[in-house]
Length: 519
Image 1: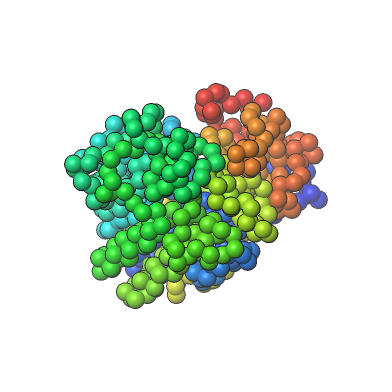
Image 2: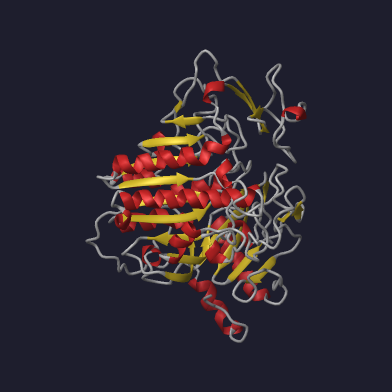
C-alpha cells in the first residue's frame, strides 16, 4: 500500500501530506476512439471485503467474482460512500456525498423518492449520450412523494431519475411491500385485493411475528417482528396483494432472468445496467438448490448463490457476443454483518471465516470494514489484470464513466479517475470522507481520522464496533490496517491539520440531529 507519510520523515512531510489532499486533474490516457462500451454495475448488498475467494475467503467458493477480480483491476482501497445501504446507493447514482443530502439514511419502504427528479444522475448522464438505461434488483431510494397508492402507477421512481427500464423491489427483502415493481407498476397485482402498507400500526386481524410465532418459518432476533410474508416476519405492516407477493427463495433467479432479458433486448445499442442483487442481506433465503452450498449456513449459501447468478449473467454477455464491449464493475453497498435481525446461525456457523478480512468494524461502522468493500473493474481485452492500491470510491464512478464516454465534466463530489479504473494509473484519490449513520470520518493518504462521537462503542444487536469514542481516533492504515493503534496522541500536528482540512470539507453539517463540535 502506498505510503504518503512514514515515521522517519513525519516532521517534514506534514505540510506535503495535507497540501496534497486536494483535487488533482490527471492527464487522460484513455483512447478517444474507444467505442462506447456497455456498462454494467453489479451491486451486492452487505458483501464484506473478505467474503470473496480472491480476497481470502476459503469457506465460500466464488469463482465468478474471482474471475472479475483476477481478470481486471482489483482495488484493495475501494470504498462505498457509506456503511449502510441507502446512502451508498444515493452516492453511487448522483456522485454526491450522502451526508450532504437530507434524509440520506436507511429508508422505510414508504419513504418518498430521495433523489430529486431535477438532480443529475449517472443514468441521466448516460441516457444523454445515447445509452439505454436499466435497473434490475434492489432500489431502496424511496418512491413517490410520501403517500404512495401501491395499487396505482407509482411515480416518481427510477424511471423519473434516468432509467428507461426498471424492475425492482421498493426497499429491502426484509421490508414491506414484498412485491416486484416494473416501470412503476406492481407485478401480478389483483386489483380486487388491494395492497395496504403502514410503518406505524398493524391492520386489524393481520398476524405479526411478535404475536404469532407459531406461523414463522424464520425466527426474528431484533426489529423484524411485524407482518409475516412466506413465514418470515418483516419490518412494517402489509395487508392484501397476495397474488403479487414474491417468493423469497426465487428472488435471485427472478432478478437474474430480468437482467438477462434486458441484455438480450438491448445488445444492439449501448446500454447501462444497474444490477443490484439482494444477497447477502437478510432474510437469507437461498433457493433449495443452493442450500448447503457452504458450511456457513444461509449467509454463506446466498453468497454462493449470488456468485452463480453473476456467472450466469456473464455467460449471457458471452453468448450474446458483447462481453468484450462491456465494462463490468462489481462492488458492495457496505461492509458485512452476521446477525442482522434473524436467527439464521450466521454467527454460530461462521467458524474461521473472516467476512471483514481482518479489518475492524463492519456494517454501520466508521471503522474500515464498514466502507472498504470488494471493488473490481473488468473489461475483457481492454483492461490488463492487476491489483491496485489506489484510493477509489464508488462516488467517483459518475465522473469517471462520463470521462470514458467523452464528457469533459466533473460531477459534484465525484472525481474523474478513469485512468485508474482502466489500470493506466495508480494515482487515486488523495482524500475521502467516509460515512456511517450520519457520522463521518476523514481519510487522507494512508491516514484516517475519526472525530469523537457520543453513543455506544458497540451495537449490541449486531455485535459490531461503531467507531464512537470520546476522543479523536487516528490510524495509519499503511502499517495498521486493522486499526489497533490510535496515533492521535503521538501525532498531534498531523491530527490538527487533518481536523482543519476535514472541517473545510464537511463544515458544521447536522449530524444525528445535533451540531458536530469540532474542537
